[in-house]
Amino acid sequence: MFPEYRELITALKGHDHHFTRLFDKHNELDQQIKNMEARISPGTHEEIETLKKQKLLLKDELYAILRKASGATA
Image (cartoon, rainbow, N blue to C red; front, side, top):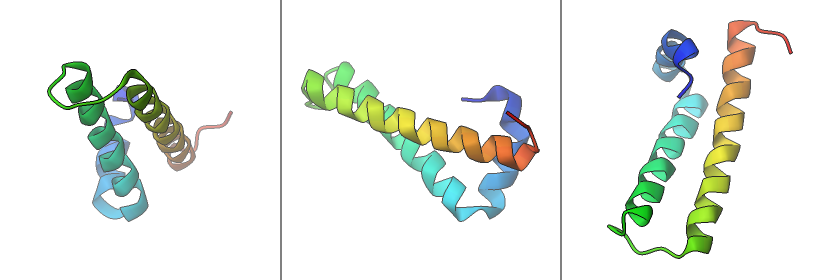
């Protein structure tokens, strides 16, 4: 996720607890979705879609933090 920000992600994970929590939650949701889709864990189509939406919201929030931290403008 966001390979262009790899170094910034590492730096933020080292000192920004909010960013780290969001990043970890995103990865947790990603794994949960993969497990449900592979039928390793139970989950309905609706549950998977809900998790995907939550994951996307987290990704948007992470991206906004990365853009702000990098000094990028819209």
